[in-house]
Length: 479
Image (spheres, one colour):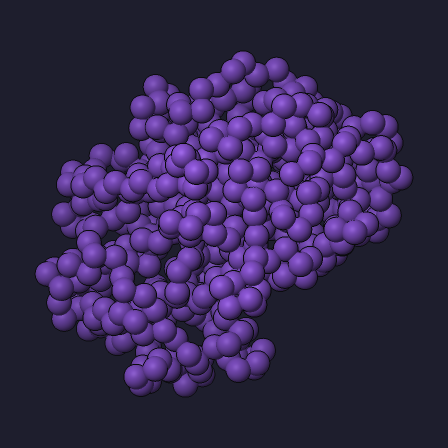
C-alpha cells in the first residue's frame, strides 16, 4: 500500500465549545525492548508501579478536571499533524502513551463519552466478593492532559472519512489521521425483535459486566440475588476475554455456596465451551452449574425473565446476559466493516494486520477489540486487555511513521502477545495462565501459539501482571 504524503495544514475545526489546548509535549524516551513487555512476568519492576517514560499518572478521583474537558478545542494552526483518537480503553491509552514517549509533536485529541478509565481485568473476583476492586479508576481528563493531549468528553455520533471529520455531541473534530479504538459493542438487537424498550430494560437490569460502566450495576444486582435460577449467557465467538464467562460461573458458584443460597447457575453457551472449564463444571460443580453448549440465545423477555434458545425456553431469577459483540455502529456507519464469507458485512472492522490500517481508508488506523480476522488459521486476535494495549502501541508507531514521514515498523514488529490470568476456583485458590504468542509464517500468514499454565497456589501474579501492564503500556501507576 502506498503511504499518503504528509498533509497540508487544514483550517480549524468547527466546534460547539472550546477547551484550552495543552502545549505539545516532547518527552525523549530511550529505546525499549518490545519483548520486555511481551514477557511481563520477567519484568524487574513487577508490582512496583514504575512505568516507561517519566511521571506515570496516578489514579485520580472520578470527575476531576471534568470542567476543563467539557468541550472541543479548535485544531491548532500550523504544521502539526492532527490525530483524533476515538475511544479511551486499553488500545487508545496505550497509543497515547507511545506517542508521548516518542516525543512527537502531533496535535492529539482523544474523545470518549466516559469520564474515567476502569480496567475490566480482575473484576470477576471483586464481583464474587473475593476482595476489593484491585485496579484503579483513572480520571481521563487529568490523565490525557498529563500525556500532552486534549480530552473531549463527548459521544461520537458519526465519522466522515471523506472530509476527515469526527462528529460528536460536543462539536466537530477535523483530523489528518484517525485512530479508531472504540472497542467491542453489544450487538443484541435481534434478541428483542426491534423492541427498544425491552432492550433498554434488559441492559439496565441484567448486564453481564463486560463493559466498564456495567460493573457497579452488575454488583448491585448480584448482592440483591437471594436464590433461584442464575442464568449466564455466552455468545458466539469472538467476544471480549474468551475465558471470562466461565471464570465468572465458577467464582459465582463458590459465592453461592459460601452464602448458603438455594440457587443454581445455568450457562447457555452458543459454542462448545472451554475444555478445562467443562471438566470443572462436571467434576466440582455438578448440581450447581449446568453447562449447556450449542445453546445460542434467540429471544429475551426481561419482564417475564425468560430466554429462548433453539431447544426451548429458560426462566431465570437473575441473569448476566452477555450478548453477541461487534465493532459497533461507528465502524458500520463509516463503511469500515469487513466482508463475511457470505458476502454480507461482518460484525467486525476490516484491518490490514501488517499496518493496522483500514483497507477502506489509508488515513484511518484501528486497534483493540473491534478488529476482524487477521489470519486464515485462527481468525481474530483474542479480545484481551494486553492484546488491545499491544495493538494500540503498534498503531501509534504506524501513525508516527505516516504522519512524520518516517520508516514504518515491519510486519513482524506489529504482532502482539498476551498473557491472561483466570480463576479456576477460589476456595482453595487456583488459577490458570494463558499465554498467546504470534509469528509470521514464511508466506506471511500469522500463526498463533497458545499455552496454558496451571497455578495451583496463586500469590498475586495476576495483580502483578495487571499493574505492570498499566504502568508500561498506559503510563498509569496502579500501586
